[in-house]
Image 1: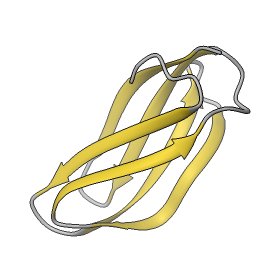
Image 2: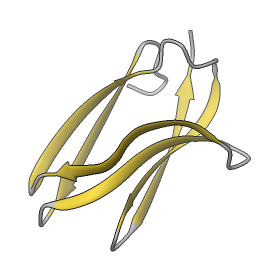
Image 3: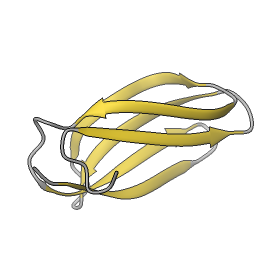
Image 4: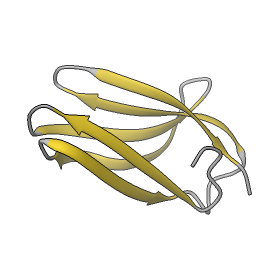
Length: 79
């Protein structure tokens, strides 16, 4: 859910299995947390859950990078 309070649930879909990096960055582009590096995302629907309970409340950008694309999504952390 957005805003997130304790957990961030990431839903994604890929036509083919891919390797990617999932990061939370501040709105000014600074890396706040790297949730997954060189993570295998399966073909089809993926659901990943990550804790944000120790991340300060605020506005962030979730960034998913693969060899073929970079996807971003605004995220609000609110405790």
